[in-house]
Length: 70
Picture 1 (cartoon, rainbow, N blue to C red):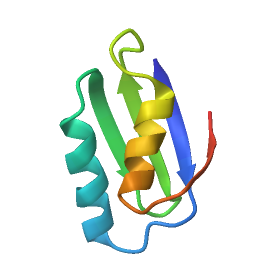
Picture 2: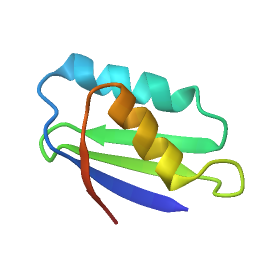
Picture 3: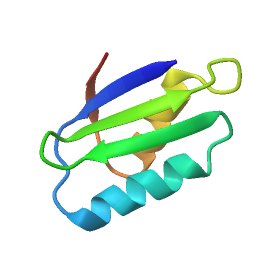
């Protein structure tokens, strides 16, 4: 499944590394891309292994608010 999460803001390149690094550690996440200019995170994941709710919760634990998802 592919989801795009809109974050409130991504303020620096180290934020990208922080989010992508965390997503790589999650079982079920197949790929991810953080788009700095639009503050979006694209995630391709196996929904039988991980839920969208857990991905959003993990992003939130890093200090970023997910304001919408598609």
